[in-house]
Amino acid sequence: MTLGIHEVEDPGQDVQEAIVLPLRANNLRRMPRLNGAAERAWCLTNDAGDIVGGLWAKKRLDWVYIDFLVVPKEARGKGIGADLVARAEAWARASGATGAWLLTFGFQARGFYEKLGYMCVTTFEGASADADEYILRKQFG
Image (cartoon, rainbow, N blue to C red; front, side, top):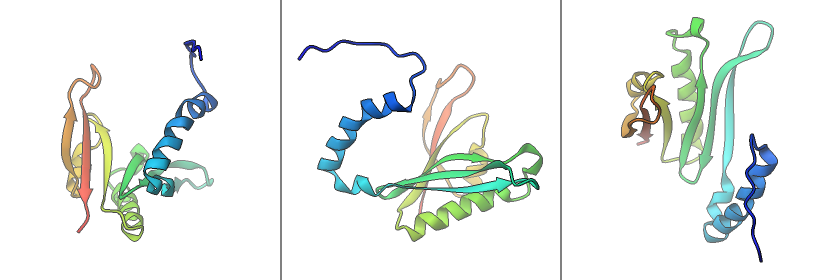
């Protein structure tokens, strides 16, 4: 078989799926529990019913990854973010997760997560010229 290399600028979901499909198939053969991934979202809506923020989480294997947490600026400091994280953690515990983890930049919410019991497990210094990136986790019970 002869392989060629083709660069794709701004690849879409179809290109990602084509690249990842053989990897996923191999991983599932070797570790069938990977097939049990689940996602959950808790949406913040305004008076018109539009989604203006929320939390998106993914459970894979024994951990939940908090992928996105967005609270509109005017609503911050009122416990909404903590409530969203608590809901994600409750879902994680109910689904048998060992803990939750996330990535955050230095200009984002590291201190917020640490107040909720998350600890920094590693720092990616120089992730960007603008900020370091941190991986935080919270192990349950």
